[in-house]
Length: 244
Image 1 (tube, rainbow, N blue to C red):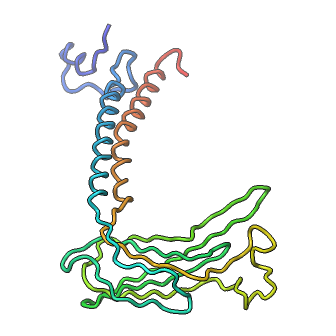
Image 2 (cartoon, rainbow, N blue to C red):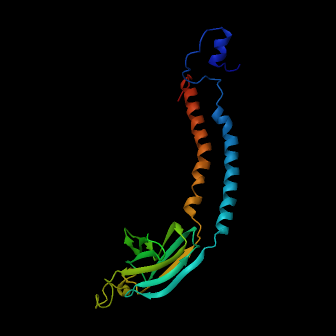
């Protein structure tokens, strides 16, 4: 026994025109989606391996050159520094890192501005580092990070004036908390306002978020084939006396 397509039956009886649209799925009808699933998954595996080696090559070719770095900076001063990013006439990716310490149940903020010396359009962004922890319902929790990174894409190469204006949570400073009630002296989860901060700029960094974009596309085809094959099988069993 084999499944006969509607067009084949139509031609056998020499009927004019086209056969009516098929409804449901025959018991012996081929499930092309299920038959192709194995080859699709194999193709997916090959593409994932190729994607992995391509990502390794691209990430390895990124220089990630350090443009500027400063540590142990005080919050009572504004950083102003001329830096050179990339090459004139080209663009690159730039990673900016802001770190504050110590940072316990507190926050620090930096307003960053890159002003092109030979251009007009400045780049500005705000960066907040925060770290919080505590106890709730008998369990400890923590969130945030003392370091925050931000990646800028397609930054034009050239000379820039880097300006960083820092701010911080001052609630636990000695002059604002003379009794030390908010410090960590009386418990493991006290508040400590940051004393110093650090700043770093790197160029030609690898953008991980773009590298992960092909993954859902690669996995999408075999998953779609699996879903369509499952849907066709459900239609087949719907015509059975033993349908579920």
